Length: 419
Image (cartoon, rainbow, N blue to C red; front, side, top):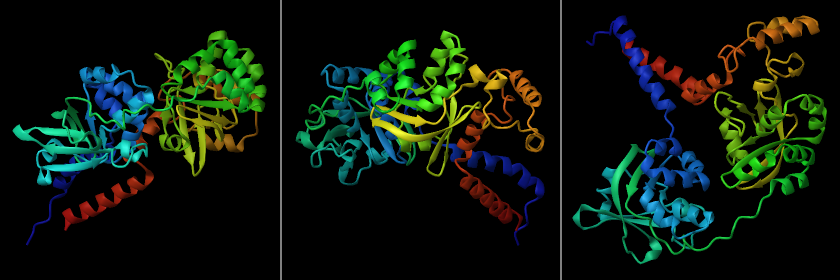
């Protein structure tokens, strides 16, 4: 008869179980961060970002990246391809299946074909977006595109990082050549923010961008991706009296705060759901805000105001512009000013009931604001539970649904131990 485990044994084992469970739940890959630890792939990493392939890689649950070191990337850049063509070539180096070093050397029949992001993009002709992986003489593993006549000019070098059945990053010796992937692509449409925004109902906002010189910063970020939150003319006109009281530097920061240095389609925006940086983010000044979704609704929360995304005005990668119903006010500029507190700003966590029952009083409101203002900027105690901490917690557990799964698994596990 099996002797039940003592309570002390259960208590000792529980922390280890929790550690393993939480670490696996929090595990998610970010190709940009992974490659940042390997400077020999800095150019490759840079172009994954510029071509927006990094975001596609991160969204995939199973992926293999055939990484090129800086020397191999130099050979590619010497051909002076457009960004569109470079994207096609690099997408041929992203396999939509998992291949670790062990699997490469144990291929069934010594060879296999793997689909790539180039094939998935719809830009490949026929099967030219497939990569032939073959064990060749001398224990080498060769890589070749389907449309190059079976000539292997690129070989496996080493494994950079493997997260089994999730992501594998393997270094290969040279660029996988493909006539189809290297074919000229149409140059992207010229996107000039000062011309495009006014035509989409953002004239008042554009006038401020031009007057402060911020339009130039927006324009310089387009090639690498730019997401803009444009307040409606009505919202901006209502805010103008406050805007005029800002210093020139603060006006610039406020306008930069309405842009993000990355392209985020509406679907990508909804999946962000957490703290994001802006064009104003620098040094000790976070100038960040929270993206929150509620069904199909997308909200932007700054801890001073909560604005709703009411429309998509432009979505032409690498630029996307959303209309919001309020001016986004960063806590770095407006937190200490009582009259700037928005009625939708979250109430202090320690006194939610008091705020509901007492009659509105300018003096009481002023007192609450002063208490908030005394908190250091970026302090963990400034607004109850900070949004960035909340985001970290959500990231660790993934979602409310996963919390329920954790509780259920713990209950079952403890039940088995105590039998």
